[in-house]
Length: 71
Image 1 (cartoon, one colour):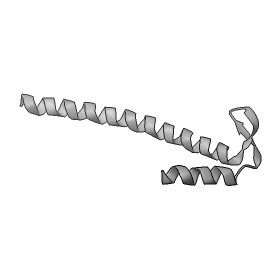
Image 2 (cartoon, rainbow, N blue to C red):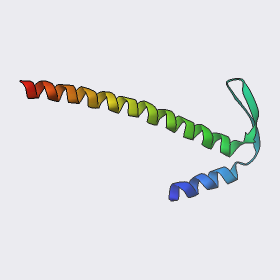
Image 3 (cartoon, one colour):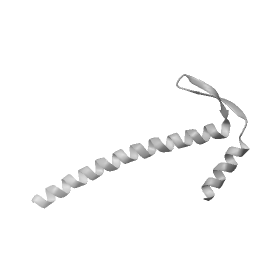
Image 4 (cartoon, rainbow, N blue to C red):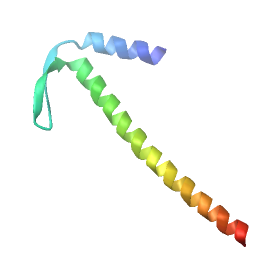
C-alpha cells in the first residue's frame, strides 16, 4: 500500500510532458508515466527470465533426483 502511494506521488509530481521514442515510435507522454511504464516493462522482463530459469533448475533437480533414486 505504501509503495502504491509513493508511486502515485512520484507520477503526480512529474506531469510535465516529454517526448518519448521507442523502436522508431515516438510521442509525447507525462514523464512520470513514461518512467513508471519503463519500470513495469523492466520488471516484466526480469520476471519472465527468472521464471524460465526456475523451470530449468526444477527440471535439472528432478533429473538428478531420478538418477539418485535409480542408484
